[in-house]
Image (tube, rainbow over all chains, first blue to last red; front, side):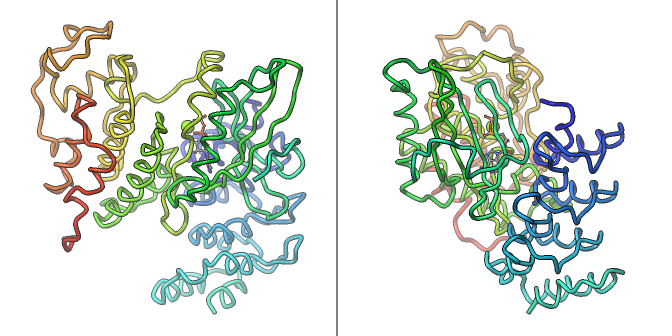
Length: 145
Length: 304
Ligand SMILES: Nc1ncnc2c1ncn2[C@@H]1O[C@H](COP(=O)(O)OP(=O)(O)O)[C@@H](O)[C@H]1O
Ligand SMILES: [Mg+2]
């Protein structure tokens, strides 16, 4: 494997230990792999630990896919991993940006039926946790409607 | 599902996620739907007759399985064949991509680990997918937490199965480090094997769901067997397969240890099922179908 692919691959595999050690050894958190993608764009969306480590090391959560126009938040919302959605927003991901089809993350979550699974209780919890963030998550009210 | 000629058009790779002796696995984006897919490609030798019959059969089998639309098997969305040279064709299988594996799922479970009700549900689905594969005479052969995918809705989907015969012609090209931790004794001993190998792996994974860490972490075949026997005991001379080179004398006599020493959190029913899966003799090991009917899954109210 190409050296510069290592971090992206580790992120895609959800291998949080390897991601962490590569970063500690100087890997560029926003460096692109041979497909022109940064680690946060290709990470295993269900791996909240990987998302957290990348973001804590300064990964840009608003990076846009060159072809699909999707941000990591679009992909996390489409695949329904709410914890990852949460942490992306916490680190400043813009919930209002549209992809090439002009879909916002919330639209993709809804299209894939992920808005139903948040029970009333967890919706409240989610909303509360967002209320503390400095970034006003416009994403949330529509996401929870 | 069409045999597309050129795989480069509809799917754009974004990262390499796996590499074996036979080819590479990519995470890619389906440009039409915007969704991620997993591309698995294998290079096969071709002659005047085209693709080898074994490859055609194997792909046909996978496509036949796909028709059942089984909920616990990753979807095979497309198969592409690209001619590379006169002697070589690249066959690319396009699978639905699931953005979480069981390894990650278990790592995320807050202490004290998964509730029993969740373990039951995961195991039910895993066994359901497995008995489907086995009923079609498909072995998985490499069941491990990385190959068991879990959607954000908690649906289990098995990946990385059924390519054994396509691969087998291409193995041993590059030495790959494969984990031994989920390998059954008969595979470790290089004896003949069949569907029970997957049940052994399932047993190891079942134990891991309670422990949140792997059950047997061997560093070599012999070390792996030693670790296994330290829990299930050294099998008797007449249980030892006759078609193997490694003799029973290489291992210390050991009596079986209570499984609750290794998996303290497990219930009595769970321990019974686990021991039936971790049975040395593949012929006496429980089948996927019988395991689904085990009383561990009967609907008694859970204590947790
Ligand atoms: N359909 C899929 N969706 C998401 N990840 C996958 C899928 N198929 C495979 N993977 C991931 O890629 C890794 C390598 O792919 P795999 O099919 O297991 O190939 P290998 O034969 O190299 O083990 C797996 O461990 C798994 O985590
Ligand atoms: Mg695999």
